[in-house]
Image (tube, rainbow, N blue to C red; front, top):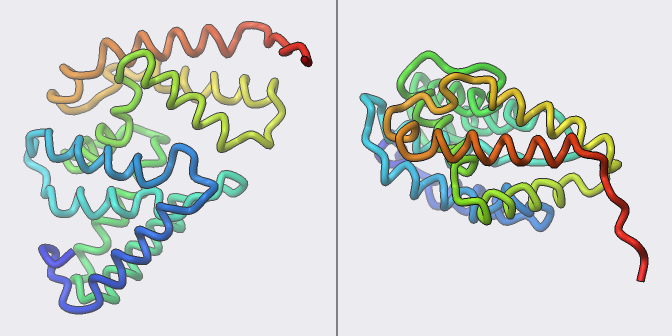
Length: 204
């Protein structure tokens, strides 16, 4: 945050963010996801984006996460604006961080290089190895354990199909080379499984 112009209170802001990411209900969207995102960013070329702003956006992008609620990204973006202003980051920079946080709703592909990089980092899990992707899907299901199985399968399949319809899925050359083919295969397999009739596990 200091690289963005923060002048005071940075340690307290990081502590608050770390506590939020470590909440017990986060099975996938927890600290390990944040760390993975930051590592993916470190391994990616800049693509012309301000990496300092993208990094800050990743810290905030799931800072508010309640699977029972909608608008998590909106509240995360509001925290970014408020929190960065509170530590002295200039308002235009805070607004850009908040804008990138909102893009991680993934409702539509972004059109700018910073948005491309932030969204590709967040979606990079889709292109990991089959076991890693399957674990990701299990963790997402665990976060929505309260949703009835048939409802979850239908909604989740719709979400994954939305990603599969994107061409390309990844918007930066780096992530497209690294993950596009594997992501499409993972998504196709997951969608097929979700669209198949569920089988009840017999009781012991």
